[in-house]
Length: 287
Image (cartoon, rainbow, N blue to C red):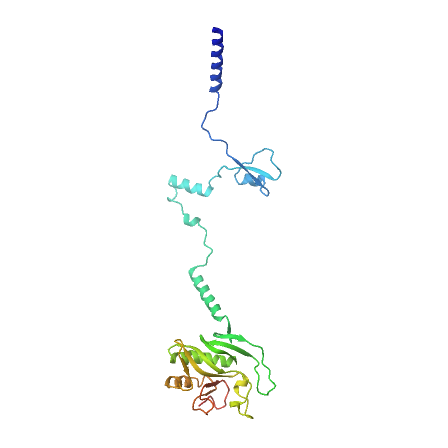
């Protein structure tokens, strides 16, 4: 019995000695690894500050440690300078921020102005942004004096729409645009939103009289306006509404157009204003 006790005591002591040899230090486990596929190569991984393992790995794979990379030398030098007092305190973070890619405020302002100008010219004709419409193919005619070689189909001028597209030439379109902008709108306080168009291009004789000369309508140089529509929906017709304001608007067309005819001129224009860009030797013809 005494021998058995001695044997057990010796075994226990041996176990304790062996246990004392165990590593019970608080050191963390080795850094985990991750695999990088090609095209990352061993030289590239080493240059990046990672430590590739020298062990067999699958083809095309590189084992790289997740250990944090060293602080960039420039930052380390700045931190050291602050610590030793050789450099101003604090890092110049503003100098380390890359320049913004967006343009300067003045450049953006110019870009916006250019964009607005581009949009304003969209859909315009005759080289004037305020004249909206489209160019049309030449209009031939078997009737001598009729036809329109370089015409446009105008839908609005100076922001005022036309009740129907007017097929005219650019000279007439520009005169109509100037008249609306400088005469019509000021007279009505900018309230006009539409012109009622009674006629534009049509191959016919003057006043539809058989045997008469070809009308300026047959050349694309004339447009007839029968009424003005205001922004409140009110319609101001030429027939029966030729008041003081409308007469001022009518007279304002004289000079801008080569010919202006209306109520009281010749009996053929009581319900509309005829405006054309014909050239007269004696100057503008206004009645």
